[in-house]
Length: 162
Image (cartoon, rainbow, N blue to C red; front, side, top):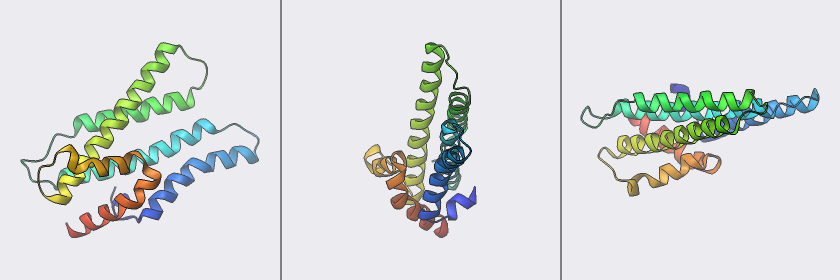
């Protein structure tokens, strides 16, 4: 986990980008469709980064500001599992199952971003925050290809100080 906290922005960006493109390139050269592996791989790397920042930030908060991260952990894990099911079982499934899996993924994704951005800004600022205080971090995690360049240097600074 500390690997993601001490990594530079370009390293996080490349890790996610390589996880996204490597299966596609391998699939191209061996003439096999590997799009589903690509999505599962890069989403996993992104969620590990999100998890690392969220759990570490929450653990560094004072006891009165900490929250129980079980809901965060369950939703991130559920989103990863639903993404894996959607990615690897790409056969036609019932629409109800597809909607359920997509809903689980979206709920886990946005809860993970909310939890991580709020806990990180609380840790960085040292106090309680409202949404207006962490909306920038929320947006950076949501739009990670551009946001990683803004948020990861702050993550590096905050955890180096601690």
